Length: 411
Image (tube, one colour):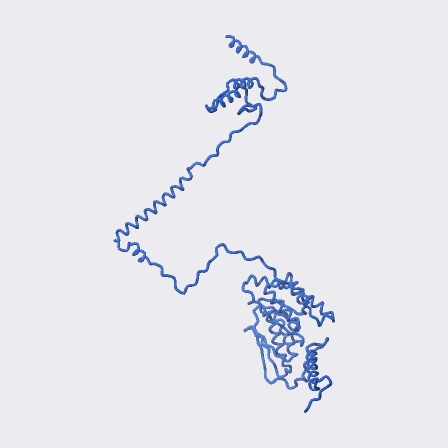
């Protein structure tokens, strides 16, 4: 069959193939986008009138502390599962819950929802929240976080960081994802729509990897605001989202003692010398036992003598007097005062100080006797200290002494 060519030289068959490809691409893109307000139709008995061929059942264990709560809410669980024609049994002796299909069960996925319900009940999720799993647009995700962090203390801190102060972080995550989140032990149970569960899992895993949940919550808030704008819905949001980078921490301090790696050698290390080898090398092996004992005793005595001398030195340390500091001579300032002359000294004592100063001078230097006499006369006539305010009258004793001195000088 010949293919006719158009004016541009392109065959009709080629143009037909291109148009079919474009149609297929458009159809696939349309399938990927979900229209607003679309909801999946409910599965009824008319869709599967004959029911299921075989019976299927699931069982799960629950901890001892959940026994009282399960006994209390068990009639409500049976009623909720009875609407989907699923049989449930509670075994308190073994501590297990079992769900199984019946002849009236028509929905094949109902048993899977019942299995998720008993899993959530066993993991401390309250019945009011766990019953929502039986709805068509609801799903659950149980995230195991116990094995993500090795250190127990670090694990507890990061789990508490996910909950936040008074549960504020967890509440913010629930509002942004439209999911119910329950942190219990080594697992995190989440219940909600598929899109929200994906976000919850990301936040939980990042928190366990030491990324604070506030960063992910901030990005979720920005995404929520951007989704309201119809123009930005089909665009890339990377330019609006914040990029949180890890801060470069200070470098690890280098250890004081660095271990230097030795060069690899295929040969094993030499065998250490035994006691006999050492004795053979020194020649002690060939000595008599009496000589060996004598040498050992001499070595012991030398060690004892050294120890005694050390102890004696330590004892004598207490009797050694400490070194005293040398006394510093006080120097007086003043132009008219002689050497070592203070205010409180009398004229006679001052003269004595001057004479002693010159006597102690070295013999090599020549003494000027007349200058010394002048200094002594000046010191005698000089009045030291301030005069009294009210000078006392001369006493009789002082006058008597003067008269005696005059009589002695005349004689």
